[in-house]
Length: 384
Image (cartoon, rainbow, N blue to C red; front, side):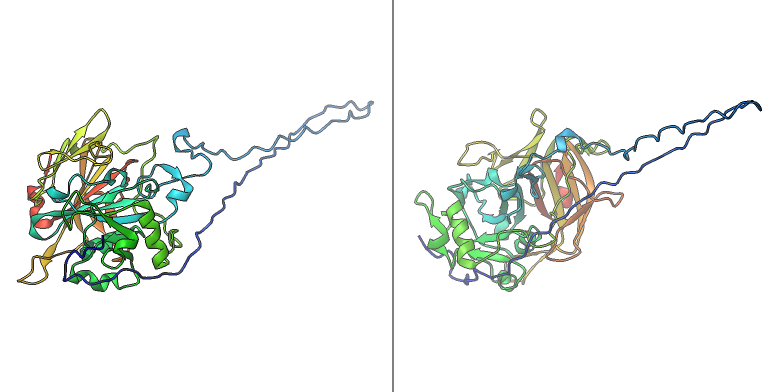
């Protein structure tokens, strides 16, 4: 344990940010009352006294009509909607900060462990034609093996910050150091906390044998003194459709097969499974599975996000991928796809995805895989 990964990687592990209290809100119900007074006519004779009349009783108060919430959207006591999947989860799980873990994705590091528990997975190219994954986890309390954990690239720091996530990585490229030193991200670096947080196995060669478990996640939080609840005012990264009214993309084009362009090493693709309504993941010519469950990875939503990019310098292979300044993309779910645009109001904030009418898209409930594709490979991305 504690074996260094890359000699050039420096130690940047903890930044403390103060505690903030969650917002609370209350709602009241207003009622509208209507009263009508009746009119009465009484005929009298000149020789007879008038007959007394009684005013009609007032009508009962009528409450303002309130549309019922569909049963599918009603949350049991103690449950909240997950910010990662939109699905009901225990409040203690759904309102604590998720962890973002950098995962190796070369063939000698596969299959990954614990990856099927990630509510959101980002995949992006790194140097050498390979891709690296970042899984966002909120359901990890019983996980004994997450990984293998690899080093940070600077564009992933922006992505993790948008989820207000605790960022776990083992080393970093030099270009990411200023971001990791900033107050915008809370990170736990394996180069600094190797034995206290991470552990190594003997079944794979270094650097592809560093792992994380639930105890290590908790140790990292304690060592660095990070807050565990979402920051004040945070209300999620994605918008979600309801269970009662799922997003069908009826006007979209067919999307039973999805293969991102420019992913030369692993050549991944997704195949739509009508029976489950999910997209099954493949790479290296075979199903991609979780080592712990031996089951194939499957997601409900796919977002292809096209990004401009450049190399940092002529002598380096490191990619400078722009995940901040906006671009185009594709939203895919339920066997259909539509074109979208993406933008950010704040480099460290959430990414907004909008349809051709400028409306923010709603994801269907479930897991999401975001494919970061270099914009010059947009035409090589297959969606059919």
